[in-house]
Length: 332
Picture (cartoon, rainbow, N blue to C red):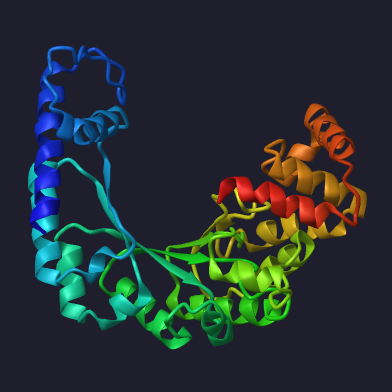
C-alpha cells in the first residue's frame, strides 16, 4: 500500500506543477505548456509522463492497475481510494479489474464500503459460463462463483463489465459455451458485456493443445454462429453489448439490450448469409484493418483493397482460416 500511495503522491506533485504552467486559453482536453522549466529527476520520469498524458485527456478517470486489485485488504484499498479522491477530487470514475473468485469472497459490507470510497467500475473476466470450458482453460473458478461475484458487485452498486471470450470452448464445446455463458449473464445482468475473441499465442499452454490437435479452434464462420447463439439466448437483461477489440470479427455487433437485440443479430445473419467468396473478402479485409464493420464492404475502395489483398496472398477457402490465424497473431 505504501508503494501505491507514493506513486499517487508523485503523480499528484507533477499534476500540480503542470496545472500551474497550463495555458488557460488552451482548448479543453489539451496541454500546451512549456515544460522546460520543470526539473524532472530520472526516477520520476514515468510518473511525469503519466501525469502529462492524463492531464491532456481531461483527468476524468483513473484505472487502478494490475489484474485483481480487490485482492488487497478492504481497509488498504479504501485508504488508497480515499487518497486518490483527496489528491484528485475532480475525478469522475475509478476503475479496477477483479477476479470473480476474489469478489465472491469479499463481504457485502466491505464491497459497499469500497464502492462508497470511490471505486465505481469493475471489469471481470468471466470468459465463459460453462464449467467444462472453465475447467478446460484452468480458469480456477466455477459458473456458480462467477454468478455470485457478478451479483454481489451489482448489489454493492458497481458498474460492472463482464468479458466474454467467443471461441474459448473450441469447436467441441462451442454450443455449450454460448448457452451456459448466456445463462450466467442472464442471472448477473451486468452493465456491459464485452466480447474478446480467442486468439492463441505461442506462449500459452493452450497453444500446445491446439498444435497437437487436441483443441480444435473455431473458424470465423463457427465463431459467428456461436456469437449469434449467445446473443439469441440473452434474455431479461439490460446490458450493453460491446465489441470493442481488434480481435473481434465485427465491431458492429453491439448495442443495448433488449431494444437492439434484433439489430445486433442482423449483422451476424448478414455475414452468415453471404456467399463464401464475400465472407472471405470480409475476413481478410477485417484482419488487415480494411474493414471494421460489415457495412464497410459497401465502400467500393475498401472492397477493392480487400479483393486485391486476397489475390496478393493467394487466399482460397482452403487456406483462409490458417491465414486469419496468422494475421491475428499481430495483435496478441
